[in-house]
Image (cartoon, rainbow, N blue to C red; front, side, top):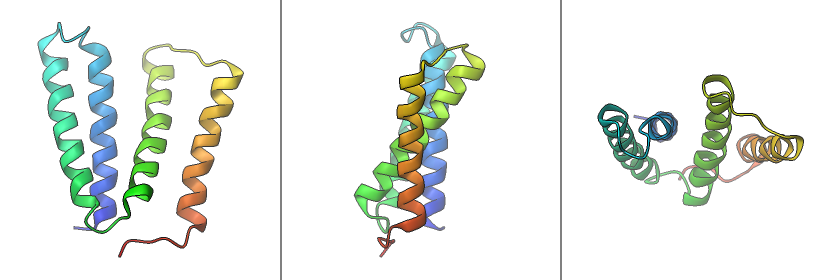
Length: 110
């Protein structure tokens, strides 16, 4: 399997796990707690597999940036969390950084 696909699935699992973490009410609710723990285990396992060929700094930058963007969107849509202008600008810069890495960087998987 392509290691970029591993990274994409790892990010998706991390986003699901973080969303479940919010719903777990401090680990007081069993199902969201289980989803969160299993999601993080799966996410880190797939991240580790992706690091076999994707440079660590690139993988982590993409992991963090896409995760932040996705969690922010989920927080806004499902949890009604608002952003002020500085927060939105900062998150937009993170998204821009991920795009720059993917579109213009010469660093690639080895």
